Image (tube, rainbow, N blue to C red; front, top):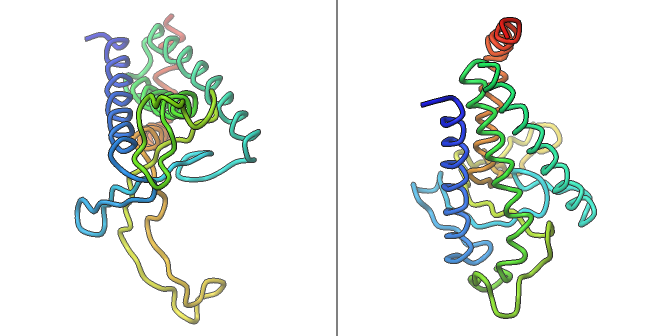
Length: 208
């Protein structure tokens, strides 16, 4: 199988898994609902993120639209770069890592761009796909669906601890989705093996 086909397969599988799980959560769970899957350390917890990854927010509605546009531009740049790397026969795992990042970015773009148009709100009800009254928001104004929650460790900071003494804490607290995971894994692989990846890329460019 060629590098292009493998890259497309990675992107397709990540998007398929990401969207299937998001649509299932939207059409089977109420916002804020949690379902323990593996005890209390892996919970399917339905949240909606109006901003960035891992539940972070950015500048209200104007910031959200700007973020969505940035995601679109970023995705196009990555896609063009992936095609260039395939053409120059760069290190395969560099291409696969960028494919993960691209798939994750597109997965969240789909939510932001279209979910507001095709779903009604999930507050106090299970959302309906293509509701007769229309969706809850316009193009690029939808919320990203998050559901993966790993509260692996819960406890309290000791009284002597500065700033947060006696306060409760949870590790790992952010709720995220498969698209966020793909981006994170792709970036970590690139950071860990960047020297090898970029040396290989430079050698192939010289040969070309």
